[in-house]
Image (cartoon, rainbow, N blue to C red):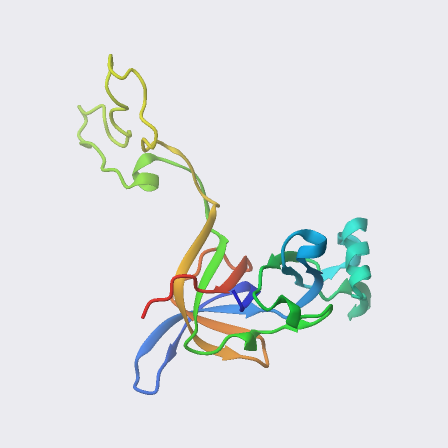
Length: 226
């Protein structure tokens, strides 16, 4: 892997190509990500870079994380919001690692911006999907309902759980009511439609997992399709 970046989901919109074709896209606020640590095989057993993304107030960081960012050379700055002054770090809300093949090309406090990708690139988007709470078997597993007449005692139940005497247990994977959503999901082979380097925006064709403001990890795809 040579290209990856952290982003937050802004929302969905649509763009028109020169021939008038309409394309639904997801807008991602990608980076800037600041390199806070470079791991090597000699010291850590593997090569990777650690990046920090997302502005955060100093008082919301724990002392170990603050010390780690300071060791990397990152400094906080004072931001004025009207009469209120807040001390913030340019990165630290999200800290992740990327195993780049060209780890040696990066140095501490280097910045990874949206221009690392270009229109036409294929990417994999990973995020935590929307949580749906506790749902029944019809919504969660796509099962069909029973008769809705007054005499029926089977409306939206999940149905039979299995045989009685043999095997006297419920098979693994049986569709049942339960928690739905809020899991790590990766959508592969999404196409980058447009990149706005000035505003650090990446427009990706189609839908991306997660709700608005969710953290999204964009990586170059591992299953490129011709």
